[in-house]
Image (tube, rainbow, N blue to C red; front, side, top):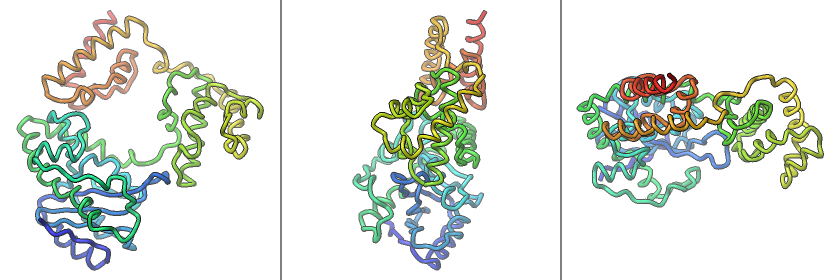
Length: 368
């Protein structure tokens, strides 16, 4: 078994990066915490080449420029599995992250291994190796790290090279490398890692069914919560739960008594932020003149039947291409097409030829 290098000194990091800079690929994973914070707290970065596995203790290093220069070099592929959270942690800590990468989860999705397959399941499917469990919920900020923790962390990169060497040729053989490239381009767009308070309301379940005034209030409330969570570096649900924001947007309380009734059981929120919440709701309600969004309208029976028919086509095409239906088109996106909304993801890129043009033609035909 390859030795696991533990890197917690600047000179050791520089030496490691020199050894890795000419490797044909570089496997990368991260360990971070965010249960008590808004931003992920990066604790460990694991890297591996064909004969090197290392755990870089970024909490012990004052700066990690050699590591970031290595990760962000536009040379050999940087291999991740389900990279989004890793990239978010790197952007949050260092303000930059790799763009030349190969995501084994996306590749597996494109090759019929199942929707959003986990790393351990994919390793077992491809290599036959069953990975040990036990440290997925560990506190990666505690030091010293135990030997079994380092082995667990190292395993998260140890097999990425084998996955890459199997999945990359398979994508090429099926003509899907460009599909992966499109998905990775979206994944690595830095704009996707800038917290946006103005769109935070879209994460609240039930938001689209609110009437215009309620939706306007929810937008203001969710933006306020997002900014509070960012400034305090606390999970947004610790500031105010989704259910609470939705209840406020539905009730639209206009005085302290009504607010306290709506916030029954959440006295601290009413006591500390009550005036702010009332002001946000009042301002949003008084200026709201927007019509109900198309996406908030219920589909009529004919539209529901059309969505059902289009989803049958999605499932059929997915089976023909041996990929997950959800990777081709989600029900929500099909509903957007039926409502005449844009953008619709499957009308762009590789999905357009595989399923988008067909669904658009069927929708036009149904519209008469």
